[in-house]
Length: 122
Image (cartoon, rainbow, N blue to C red; front, top):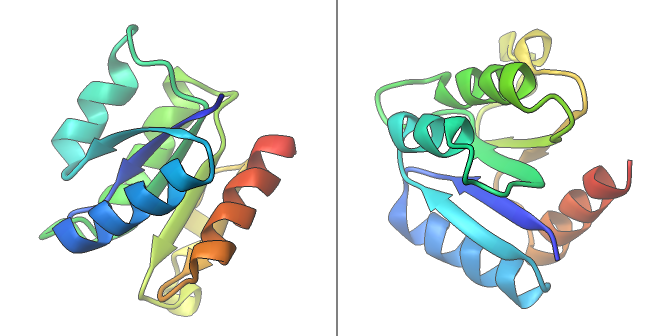
């Protein structure tokens, strides 16, 4: 069973994402901030298979980009699924790491589960 690190600063969105991802049969670990996510990615005890992160985390409008870079440095095999209500034409596309995809908000439960599954298969 794959474990998904969910990084989302909006509590309601985090709870909904956890519910959808767990219902699809995945384990979840959650972080509500850049610092929490950094600690989880850096922890040798964290068993992660994929990271699902919002690009904007509170005041840090590109916190998810930093998480993606950290994942690529410390755990290069782990794919990253980014999400945001912002459009990728805002210059963000060039900042995303390899082995990643972008899922625009709002997304459906099915779109989220399919995007995670596709990245894990790739």
